[in-house]
Length: 93
Image 1 (cartoon, rainbow, N blue to C red):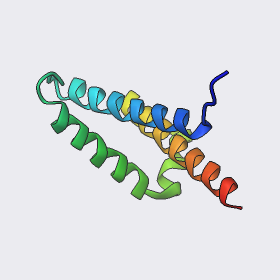
Image 2 (cartoon, rainbow, N blue to C red):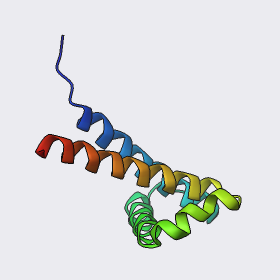
Image 3 (cartoon, one colour):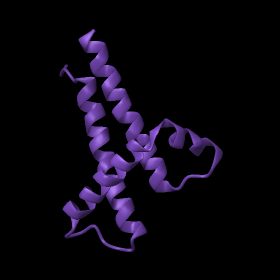
C-alpha cells in the first residue's frame, strides 16, 4: 500500500480548480484558453486574490443572492485553501 498525504490531494484539487477558473474566465470572455494558458492562469490568480480580499461579509452574502459558475468555483477554491490551512495548523499543534 502506498502512502498518500492528505495535503497532496488537497493541493492537487486546489491546482485543478485554478485551471478550471482560468477556463471559465476564458469562456466568459469568449476566448480560447489554447495558446494563452499562462495569461488565463494569471487572470485566474487575480480573480482568486480579489475573491479572497473581499472578506467574509461579501462571500457570506452569496447565500442570499444567486452566484454564477465563476463565483461558485472561486468559493470552492477558497474553501480548499482554508482546508489546507486547517490541516497544516493541526499538524503544527
